[in-house]
Image 1 (tube, rainbow, N blue to C red):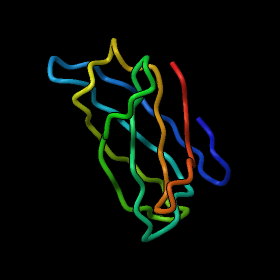
Image 2: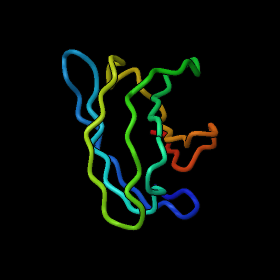
Image 3: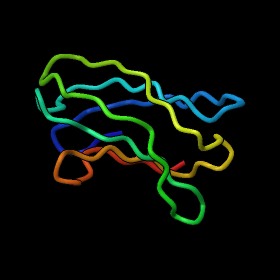
Length: 90
């Protein structure tokens, strides 16, 4: 996945309670809050957590959502202004 100055990869791990997102990347602006969201087939948003950017250093974090993996069709990371910096469809 790539979004502007952010370079990121995510692995989705299905669980009985929802889905885990193992996110790694660089370029998340230091000190800014980022929000992860999953999307279902109808386009509904499902929150998957937040994290604080660490700048050019590599960042690894695990995020979670109650949305089941088989119902998830997309993923997005937005900055504090709601601008998507990473997005992916699957």
